[in-house]
Length: 244
Image (cartoon, rainbow, N blue to C red; front, side, top):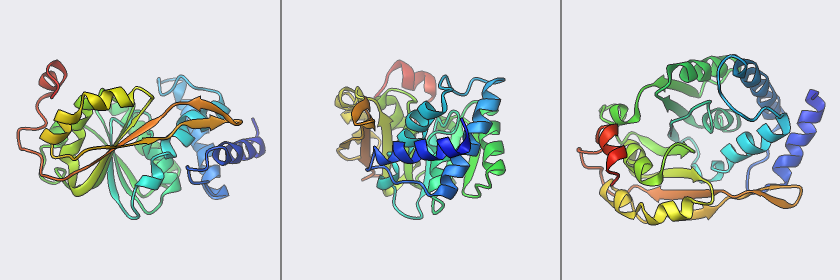
């Protein structure tokens, strides 16, 4: 695929999903470069099973940016379990106002994210190799972020315990989920309250392609109302064995 075709297909994909902000041509050029870098690295390291550029635009870029309109200007955010840099990298490209920390326990992926951010000139993104349950205990990280986001990481009760400790009072945690997010929320109300959250807002964020429903998506938005008790998050063995 040439850049010219990528440019037109990217514009078309975002136009089909008007709730997601349309990138500028400069931002699309960076998404093109991101695609090149990701596919090259993917030959040596498993970053994504999606290798068709048109599918990457829809399933990674449009999908990652469904959250953008729910993030305030100049917010300080943390992406928990960022994996190959989603939604961190597209957000950093398309929201220069944000200050983004990407967190993942896999050092190779964090090295990739940091290296890619440097190549793309993204000064608003830094990545850390660490476990969320450990980082959330550090005073400089705990309840210091306007927003925590997690995309396709874990079941929602687990995510609540891992993510809400990072969020300051009045901030938000947004879980990016598929259609099963509705069912996950029904099992998460206790975890949300124990970790200081209020009742969630569930937003339908389905992705459309050529006028037809393509992927069902849910954004589960939890406001932080109270401080998270110091006992949370527990160690991951406890979290996974006995979710809140």
